Length: 552
Image 1 (cartoon, rainbow, N blue to C red):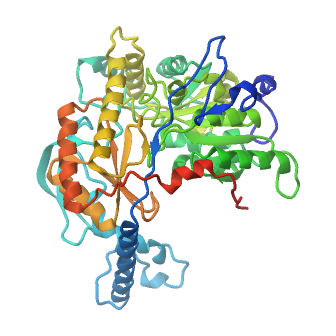
Image 2 (cartoon, one colour; image 1 turned 120 degrees about the horizontal axis):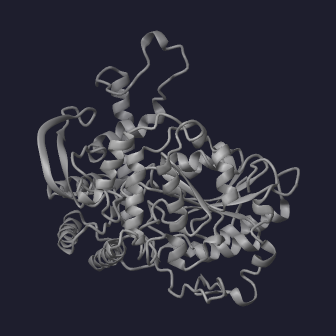
C-alpha cells in the first residue's frame, strides 16, 4: 500500500488475501449481524454480543414543527436582509468595501445567509470560554451581548463548578496538575515547550521514539508514527497512501478530516450508507467488476475509510463485517479511532479489542491523543513497511512542527496508566468506570423518554432536540443550572436533527450523573423533549436494504 500512484503492496503481499478471502463463506457466515472469526493465533475468537444501536424516528408532528421553524426563520431572514440592504437595519456582517464593488466578492453574502440570520440568534451557546482544566467540573467565563450575539463582552463573573458534559475527557486524564504529572514537569524543564523543527529535520526526539514504541505495543502492531495534530493526521496522510487511479469507499458520516484527506488525495471517492454492509458490498462488487470509469481498468487500490465511534451519532463501526468484506474483495481498511481508542474495549484498546479481532485485520490504524489521553496530536500505526513509507512521504512529517515534548510525555504517562505499566490498576479501573457510567447514563435517558442515538456502549450520547429554538433554550437553561453541554445543529448535522451531544467520562461520579439526569428530566418536561415512542427508525432499516443507486 506504499505507493499512492502505483500498484505496490505491503511486504510483497496483499495481506495474504489468498488465505483471508474465505470470509463470508463457509464457516464464517454472519450470525445475528455479527461475523464470528474462526481462528486467531490458533485460539477461538468471537464477539458474541448483539450490536445494539438506536436511531429512533421522531413523531411526525415534531418534524413538521421543526421544518416550520426553519421556514419561518428563513422568511424573516430574507426580510431582515432586505432591511439591511435598504439601510434601515445596520449590517454587522463583513461586507465588501464600496470601492471594491466591481471585484469578485470576497464575502459570499448569500452563502452566509444561515450564519447571519439563524446561527447568530443562538450563537451564545457556542464557543463559550472556560478558565480551568476540562475535568468533571470546570469554570465558565460569563459573557453577555448587547447586539444580539454579534459581539460579546465579559462581565468579569466566573461560573464555578459547572458539570462538564461536553469535553472528550473520556478517562478523566485531562485534569489540573498533581504529583502524578511530575514526569511531564520534568520533561518541560529538560526539553522546553517547542521543538522548532519538523520530523525530517531536527525535530525527532527520543521522547517521540519512546512514544511511538509504546503506541505500537499498546495497539499490538509492528510500528507507529506520531504527529502534532490529530486533524492533520488524517488529512495529510491519506494523500500519501492513495492517489489517482485509486478508489476510496467512505462512510457517509465520516469526520471532516477524513473527507478532506480523501479529497486531497485525488482518488475517486464513493460514499456508502452509514454502517450499511449491503451498501458497502455493492460498491465493492461493482468496483471489482467494472473497474475505473470509462477506461475499465482495475483500480490500483481500494481503500475503505471508517471511524471507530462516530462523534455525531454515537454509533460504533460494524467492524467484523467490514473486515470480512475487505478480505473478500481484497481491499484495504483505514480506521479512525479518534473517539474509540481508550474508551471502548475491555482494556481500552479500541474497537478491534471491543470486537475481539486480530489487529492484523486492519491495514491502517489512526487515532488521536486529544480525547482519552488528555493531550493533543495523533498517530498512524500498522505494519512497519507502512510506517517507514509515511516517515518519508507524509506531508505532516515533512512540513509540520513536531509534537511538543511535554505533550509526548503526557501521552506516555496516560498510556502507561491505561496499560498498567505504572504498577497500578487505575487505568483499568477508569476504563471500566467509563463503561459503567455510559450504560447507566444511556439507560436512564431511555427510561425518561428521550430519543438518543448510537450504540449502548458508546460514551458519545446524542440527545435529539430537533427544533432550533429548543436547541438554544436547552443549552441556556442547563448552564443556568451549572451544567455545561454541547449543542449541535446544521450544517454539522442534518437540518432537522439538531441535538445535544453528551460525552460521558470516567471522572463523573454517580452523584454528578444523577444531578444531570434530574435536570434533564425537568428540562424534558419544560421544553417537551421526550419524543421517544420506542419505535424503530427508518435508519436501521438501511442495514437490510439490498438495492442502492450509485451516484456518478
